[in-house]
Length: 427
View 1 (cartoon, one colour):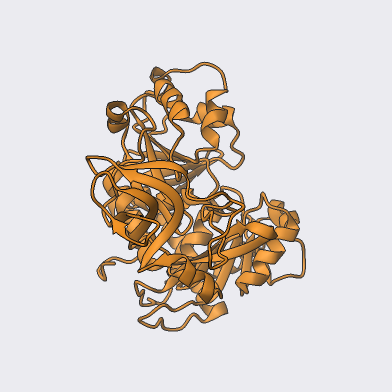
View 2 (cartoon, rainbow, N blue to C red; view 1 turned 90 degrees about the vertical axis):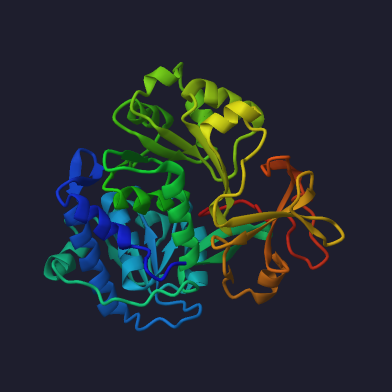
């Protein structure tokens, strides 16, 4: 990770391009780039006073842990960016999960503070952690109004410092916290900038939950001076309606694609402004990819990643999907990512024609699992993250995904669940 660039630097870059330009749009309300920066800095300053993050160490610090439980809203974006800017650790708490699950995650994460919208309070319950309502016009505003104009202290940002703890479900109803360092978030950010080349005229649609991979698109678009439209309640019809309007860039998880395809007839010409429709993080099955490309056109691209290596392990652009046959591959490794195939005898291969379990290395790979050193060791082979996916490399170095390496019911010899791409809570 470059020491010259910090995770939230795009906030200042966007404001410097045009401070008055829209940054966030929600239900017809608009927040400018300058006002967004001011509110993020005010909340970051408050978090530093309340939580005392202190100086980061050079290697792998885990600072105060702040959960956010909210739907897609301006305040959700402000909260996440302020946590990063304060030098704390963001813990996404998905409001679509029930209170029993979320209380378990809050205990495992050992949260210092929970920032929550009133509508999401039933998803958490009471008494499990100190909580602050972040709705506009509510409890947080009393503090923010006194802090407007304050700037947070600059906390040195080490590449290995943990900036996010994200949970996945594993067999037997248990949960595992993934430790994602600054290098991971910045690596994904830089890759998305290269892949989609956002510009000041872009209007990005944030319809997928911000507690999931959609959050990675926030800063690349803001840094280019573009804006995000937030959909608080995003059904298929509402998403399609938004895509038909001024939206130029959108990200959707694969589960949403068949729902959109089932929402009446539409064709590529229905989306005149749309430049990029990115689908991730696991790629699309061949048949579904073919139907999606027919309906959305060559603007459709796919991203491959997993919770432990988010979103940009490999990518396949719309033109390449047309050349190779939709869904035939998930594309070549993204810059900063390395892919190899692990054979049963432990040999790693990277040449065309190699077949085996897909393993990944690079900046976007997790630091490990929260309070789980044995499981962390088992998730790696000679420094490569094991994905549990069977794959092959074609003649161009594109990754082709096959069947699971082993069934979800099986375990490896070390007892670690073999299906590492298990059900994801905040993936």
